View 1 (cartoon, rainbow, N blue to C red):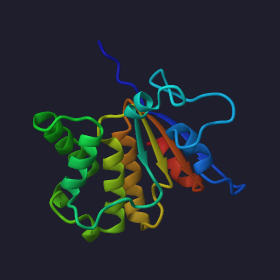
View 2: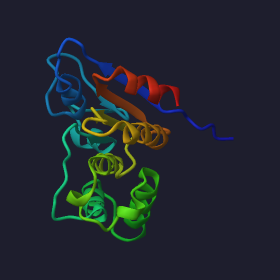
View 3: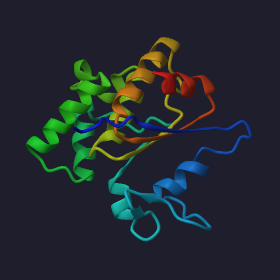
View 4: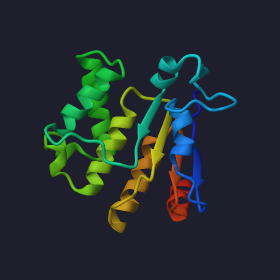
Length: 181
């Protein structure tokens, strides 16, 4: 019998105004640590960054979308960048993520026409392409209304099953709610 793994939630709440990038950049391989190493799925970010990044998804604080692309087109591009093959592999992955994130109704809508909360969901969907084992989430609920925040916390918890989820935020309530769901 296969036991379902609960997501590993690692949170960073900074009251000292330490930039979230101090945590995310070394994990993502954007900045090399002065000492030590970061391993993602047994691959060193320093010695084997391409392999390590293949198991990493990143949802940045800023909304990284292209106004000329639909939700589905974003996921096609990022899926291909993550190595998914065109056809059933890519199509099935996109459909599963769009359904899990709750963007089914908006899949053919231009990303810049989405609400702020749905744009954040699209950023999370992009981070989940390729089914990474580790997902970095930076200030996930920034700039969205309280109702959408609660919905997104549940979404984040659901899509994180079987993954290590690294959340950087200054909102202690967000972490508390996500960990208790």
